[in-house]
Amino acid sequence: MTALFNCFKRSKYYFIVVLISVCQLSFGQDLKLDFGIGKAAKGYQKVQPEDFYSNEKGYGFVTGSSVKSVTNKSKNTLESDYITSDSSFFFSVKLPEGNYDVKLILGDAKGTSSTTVKVECRRLMLENIQTKTGEFVSPVFTVNLRSPKINADEKIALKPREVGYRHWDDQLTFEFSGIAPKICGLEIVKNDQAKTIFLAGNSTVVDQANEPYAAWGNMISRFFKPYQVAVANYAESGESLRSFIAEKRLDKILSQMKAGDYLLIEFAHNDQKQKDLLPFVGYKALLEKFISETRKKGGIPVLISSMHRRNFDSTGHIINTLGDFPEAARQTAKEQKVTLIDLNLMSKILWEALGPEESKKAFVHYPPNSFPGQDKEIKDNTHFSNYGAYQLAKCIVEGIKKEDQELAKYLIKNLPEYNPAHPDPLKDFNFPLSPLVKVTRPDGN
Image (cartoon, rainbow, N blue to C red):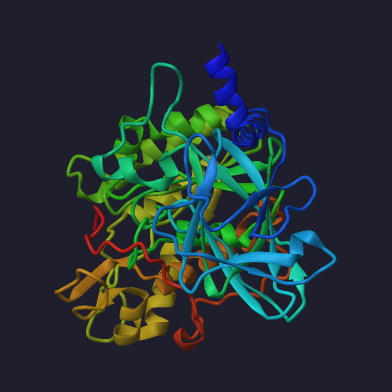
């Protein structure tokens, strides 16, 4: 007992910090972190550059992140120091499954800052948040954290490659990037009231974990209001309606769904390869199952017709490679009286506006050695670059604004109108790349 007591005395400060962290994370109290080597602000826990993540501590920088602390004189203790880096860096917090409001304190008393924030598998939350010299801002976003567990006996049947994905661990991982990211503080609060917008789909929807691939699911969270909505993206590469059910991904969504939550459903690319699945028979029946199961939980289903592949004819027009599947989605939406976002139509307009050559930049087309470990040219006419994924996300937003006024209430205010016939110029798209690179093509085509 004496030895144990002495051990406790020697480590009492570490023990207290860990105990406070565990209590906060377990019982849903606010977690407040002050970044930098200066004095901790009242009510905040100090995070210094050498604080790397451990399960015992419950938070910290991810191994490989190279960060430094900068200190300035300020009457506001929280604003007197910050953590920054010359490259993207990662920070994780151990949390249970659920929705959380995240508040960041960004800025520099003696300089400017520019910060982009992604979470989990490159899910965009804050984009190019800039501050002037001496200015500090406190943007907030609401994020979903999930687990593959459904109940004590069931869980999603994850594919081998998914085991290492950040969105299946018990941590909320932040990726800080931008020209000059300067993080003064971080606050996390559990939010049990926010609506959840669930996404079900394939590689064109999933939070793609690595560059140079992206999907509209990576980008869509950036357009929704904080506090009110969290996006939970359960899409995965290679999925069809059948496999999504068989792997219990739909069961997982339904286990988490509250009355008033949404389920956005987009499939076709992989369904069409199943020779026994006819668009107006089996495919429609499966869509109807998703709709009916969602409604049983009090949820609101929304159908999205699948976007076109990049396939042009000799006149510069898109060739439909999806057969009757988009039309079957339109017919199902009409019959079941659910909102349809016609991404199939909008993507045709978008790709044709870009044209056969410029549209390559919206897809994963790169010469050799554009990325580490990439010794061959990539030509992928199904999967998207960050630019292409961002344009498709804007199409989804525009579809919500026009087709579902109730869901549109949760979009951030004053979003400019987007016309796929006039996409954003690529030269104006300044999007920080993630250091997470894997040039292996995602499942599905």
